[in-house]
Picture 1 (spheres, helix red, strand yellow):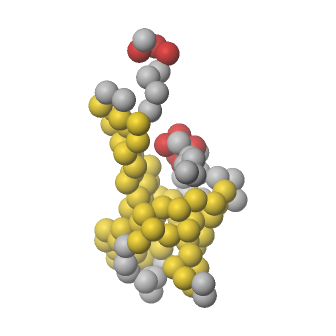
Picture 2: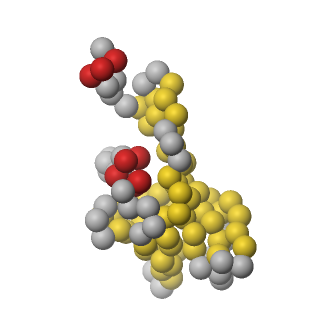
Length: 105
């Protein structure tokens, strides 16, 4: 299974561009515009990413191949959640099990 970047690694790339492949012939450049604060519950961590795609981007949810120059290649489940004249917003939600932090032992 592919190891995805952490919430903090995504946060470091705020404002940068990710390339999302909608198919063999279609790729879209999306800007990371929001990384939510993590919510912790026991050993679970939840956070979300919000990307802005240009107007005219296909509007469907799916597991898409995504590439970033620093974070590399990954697959993200993206869901269109809104938009305006600037573009279409897509959200990726993360719920993951994390190891207890050393200060919690």
